Image 1 (cartoon, rainbow, N blue to C red):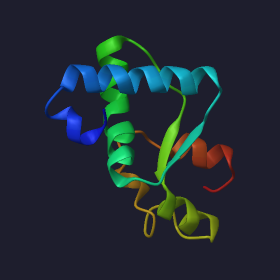
Image 2: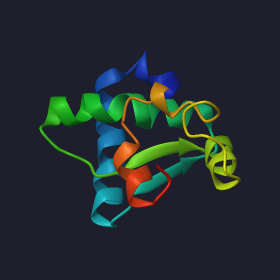
Image 3: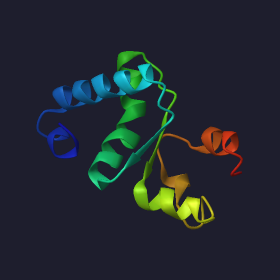
Image 4: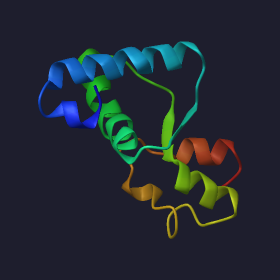
Length: 100
């Protein structure tokens, strides 16, 4: 019920994504690493939408696997990884990890 379904079944897609985010929040997940670019878009772009629409707040951020690998190898979070383009800000997470 991810990105492709968002345009056909928006309410269902957002509800399924919310259910997954709720489960991850209960498990204490702080970082989701996405292999799939569409999944990354679904979670990063629509987490703020879900928070606003459903009156919830999630304490997690999202990275594509390529961003995570680049960051792990010392790449600049903004010049190389492009974290400024994310909908869910990563600054708090990056500060907590001592990266910025």
